[in-house]
Image (cartoon, rainbow, N blue to C red; front, side, top):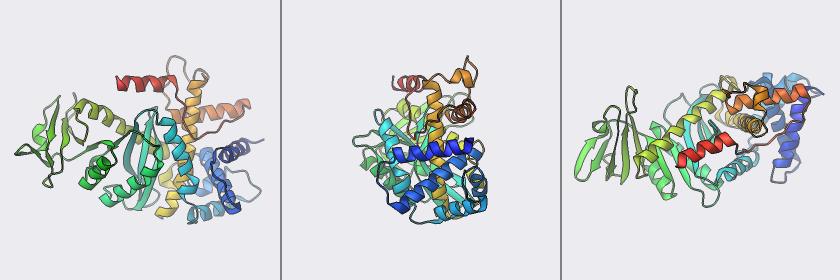
Length: 371
């Protein structure tokens, strides 16, 4: 049996097993196509449909497989509610025993489009939860788009989940902060140095707080001239940094806000793995936001699976076989790719799951953060 066939059958069978809802005949065929897309994407580590089709076992010729994939990503009946949300809910439920840290950021995908992604940091990676795709270059989305994405997130969260949301400089809008506060969530967002804040009866500009090598915080009664507050504003100038970061948060302790904000940078690993180090989603040649949104479902499920394999390598002590024994320099994503290749070479059954395992290194990092 070829590696392509082994990988596809393992993924197809796992999707059926893990999928929590009953499907009609048409939806079942769509799920099989998703399994083919997911398997082919991992096989070629690319998102161009022609390349994906070449890695999928089928009696149909490669051009016919490509057309099948093109019809799938163009089909309005393919929605995340059916084909991705169940896995996102399972992922969040598996991590809800501790605060759910969610990172919000954007990146270019396809031709002339940008994805706004909500992810949860895990083991140095950022696991995709939900997203939006719109036309445009990398830059700021309108605040209404931020609010739409939060509305997508709310029904996915487990009951009573404690949420900490982290955002870059474009996510400091007042309506955005108000919605986060109304949900009872904590947040830390980067903000601009020239924004005015009110402390008591006095107004100052955030840059006036900055001091090299120090973290200066203030409880602001009003944020911007719209006088939203109270919030905590922070000028965080780390040792060796050329300039400070300015943050706004509803957390009272600056140290806590700064700790959580460090996790925001994990999402850069996700975008790198979806692009140059992984599936090259930016080279898919698709230019319609709706089609890119659907293609991301396959790419994100593939990413979740490979991170699962990376954690499995730690849990079941495969790392010493796959990599050096004294330490592991590989990300969970790259480790997952190596473990999959090892399974192929040794004829070992291929496990497939789209959730996470808590392994010793990840748990140790978590315990350090809450002390």
